[in-house]
Image: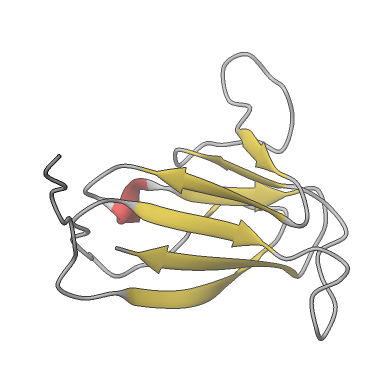
Length: 106
């Protein structure tokens, strides 16, 4: 059996502070090879974790289950991988202020 090795040439990462208004995960126009990994630290995270979910979607994303605007929630301690090539189109919002989101473009 032959196994194909899939790698990326570089990895970019950072943190975004998320509040009650939608913000892009990064203003940088990064070009991933595979996609972007999003992580919302939980309470076990050193330095403290999030107290509320972070909702992921487009520019008008809301922190709820609204059929037209509600995002996909990342609960504290969870992650989400999004296979896309334009991470600057992803927006995040929360029901609480100063939530943290770690992102890694691969």
